[in-house]
Image 1 (cartoon, rainbow, N blue to C red):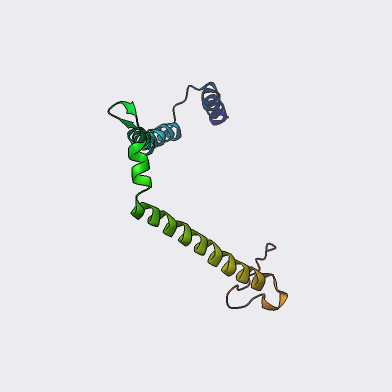
Image 2 (image 1 turned 90 degrees about the vertical axis):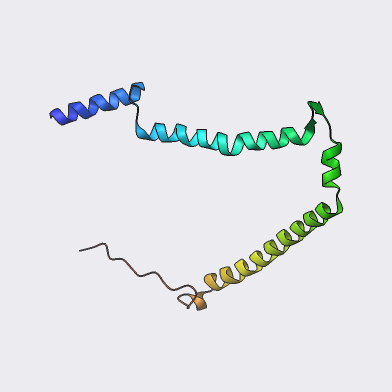
Length: 120
């Protein structure tokens, strides 16, 4: 009976926000690491892309984006993304059709899951 009162007291303290637990510490630490490692560098990259010596300037950005080497790299990226999407869709449809076909249930690619007996 005494343990129940102690647990109820801890639960009430937690509901009031007076309990400082390890999960809240790790959550705050995770957000701090996220801000320092990801958010601040991304903001600095965007800022330095459009501001040169404290003035808004897009000439450097357009010069780099329209460079023939960068344009070729962007087109290669788009081509690869489209080919991967197409290939993944074809392979996914093939395996989905094999899976949905009653004839192929339990084949080498998709073995049947063993039955689990709950009674006993």
